[in-house]
Amino acid sequence: FAAVYGLGWLGRRVIRDLRGEVFEKYTELPARFFDDNSTGMLISKLTYNTEQVAEAISTVLVVTVRDTLTMLGLIGAMFYFSPTLTVLVAVTIPIIGFLVAVMSRAFRRYGIRIQASMGDATRITEEALSGQQIVKVFEGQEYERRQFAEINRRNYKANLKLVATRAAGDVLTQYTLALGLAAIVWVAFSDQLAADIDAAVFMGFLVAMGLLMAPLKRVVNVNVGLQKGIVAGASLFGILDESVEEDTGIKVLEGARGDVEFCGISFAYDQKKGRVLDDVSIRAPSGSTIAIVGRSGSGKSTLLHLLGLLDQVDSGTLTLEGQNVHNLGAAESAQARARRIGFVFQQFHLLPELDALQNVLLPRRIATGLRWWAQAGDEKEKACSLLTRVGLGNRLRHRPNQLSGGEQQRVALARALVSNPAFILADEPTGNLDRESGKAILDLLLEAAQEQKAALLVATHAEKVAAACDRILHLRNGVITQEA
Image (cartoon, rainbow, N blue to C red; front, side, top):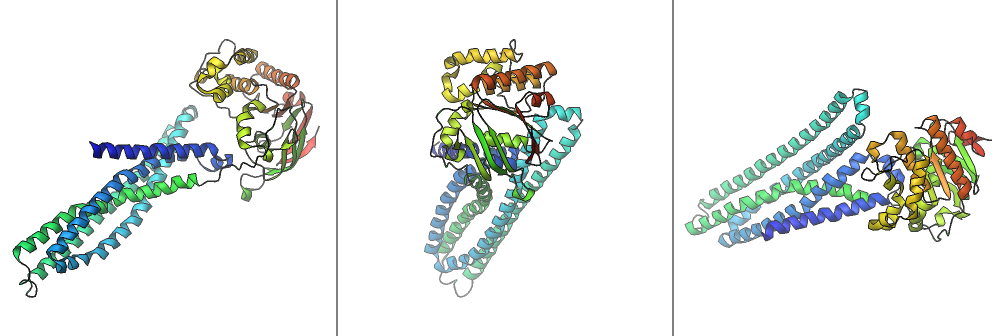
């Protein structure tokens, strides 16, 4: 019981701690990291790779220690019976060591392929399930099945090659030992040694050597799990070694009136592919409303992401209330961001386990924890009022999957405005809405900016939205080409 439970406790403890550290790291990594890595691959590392590391640490470690001690004891017994014969057996050790080294490289190579295929399988599954409507509309079921079948085939082949390598290693190791045993028998019965070794000594030596075979085989075989664990550990520790967003903050922003200024801002997701924003300068004083227009890919969304502190600028300065954002502490920024900045993303996300009203109050939930619903108080009334204003008064207790895309967008808008932010950032806020709903949303945004003296920046293609703002900035290839 102690052995089984102890191994289980050790393995699960490793998985718990390692998954916790990796997940915590995911929450600290900059947005660029997630731009370069697929969600499916990151999920696979958090689930599959941690299991491989745990197996290497628990089962492999225990087997290696236990069987190594057993082997040392048996080798000592062999040496006690006959030092000469033991030396002859030792000749096989370099050969076995060479075989283990060759197999280790093969195990590691196939381990990398297996983990990559598992990551691809998770990625394809995530894409097929999250986009199941698109798959059905375009009759892409067969395409998705072919993709998954190819990944499944690669995983199957990599696993078979790993098993074949392990089996070949078993054969070669045991044949090497068998040849060593044959040499011992031959030497033992030669004229030189036959007189010095009696039957009892020889049988004792053979029994000890025979008992050595089983732990030696287990130690060689356990190398498979060890190498897979090493590969998995390398991928996980690579994530843990990733650079987090730097906290250069030395100040805390006390209050917020809504003044924001970009001075010569430049930004690139990948320097080799060129800049997304190039020397952009904008000033949005408190209470101003600015529309940012331009073709898709011109940098509108990126500009809002920078203001939302979701990415760090490559050059130039971004100031809030006259303070450079680099001087604002990351902890303060994370804590106050939801109340200071109301962000309506183009790709909004609602928590499926919460209803519409609870999703609007998500900032309250994050700030106060378990008793958030009981402590919401006046914010509940404001959330209800906002949802009523955007046409969802009779759907407050509906879950996101019971709402249309446009209704979900309106919930996301209400969530951005519920905490009276000083900066309102809206990325295509009327993109999924009909004319009447779009007008209600636009009126609500403009009213919130006026009442709260907030700076409103809207990235939009809609001419009516742009015309309702005080200023219009035309963005083209990351450069402001015109201001009206």
